[in-house]
Length: 480
Ligand code: ADP
Image (spheres, rainbow, N blue to C red):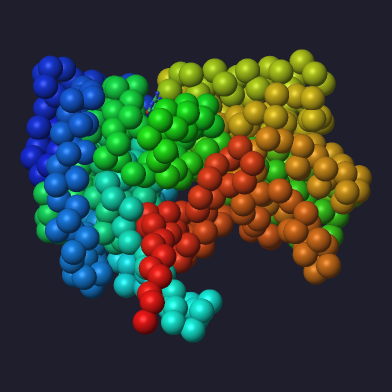
């Protein structure tokens, strides 16, 4: 099972497959079994600096290509990902734990960003602005920003990379990537295919190892003009602080605390289905997972009964096995966080309706959990659980639901169910989040702008807007 053709135990720096200077390695384990899958190099600042310098050296040639030339190479990269979707999905499940169905979906989703931005690169239009004096013409050019760096998380080991590398490379920028320590193989597999697709050496490097040292070099090095990070708000803050020294352009996709609101006029069966998808996907480990479920009094009992039945029916197991719907959590720390939230909610008066405990399978498996009678003073209302816990809060009025939904420093995704058109507009406009999903539990697609407001981050990924994160506008004043 572990003999996956894409499992590479080396970093990809300046077109070379290399180990760490120190010879050190880090173990990578399968969260479903605890078994060691292999190792990756334990690199630090020196290897990262070499990757950055190689990227800088390759920048003039990469930016000089036409957008179409870059698009053809990126298109090939996309096709290779789809040709090898099954092997890539297997590798992703082995290191991350999610079900194979979800992994296959992630590979297709990840690949879609490369396809999309290969095309968007051709549309980096500037402007011609009528002059403010008779002899003036004002031009606006969009130019690649330069060397870029990406720090990515373990919950989407493929897609969080392509969502950054796609627009960067399409715009003409090289990129150095540091994947999460837990899931480096999916990143290195992308590098294998990048090489095969003909992405020139140095344009894309993947460095594994010490987060502190690699992140330190990425943020301190003045050659890096842009850093894109997806991960926790805490580390996002740190990277922003570190980037202040060199005034880097930043994209930060940070934590969420998504509300999921069900109004009395909602289609309850559809709402339950949406809640299941948005809550338990990836075992609750996505930044857009619903974190707090607000249900109006008139449908509260009905909703809870149906949600609990659906949660209990979820098949928990090793993601690699057929039929598994919910895999393990990424590590012990993640399980402890869910346990802490469950204990806090129950201590403050919540009622356990489904699950609530470590799963009988052991390890880091956790039962799909539903808690009713939750209130705003419980930890689950203010902190992201990042696990399979659905806390349900009862509300009476629309204003109350909006006030509770907005009572958070986060603002990434929000979901709500209603069939009243006026309410749909009102609530969609009133909710403080970068994304609002109405009458569905899934919103991610490469064609829409993904990102947060408040402390959920800066910038947008995907869509026609995502490529702007990797370009600078240049104003040219022309006197004729
Ligand atoms: P999570 O809680 O989801 O693991 P983190 O924010 O801790 O989120 O991690 C997201 C990414 O940030 C990972 O690639 C991780 O290795 C990296 N990271 C963690 N600490 C640092 C740091 N001090 N500097 C740079 N990157 C870091």
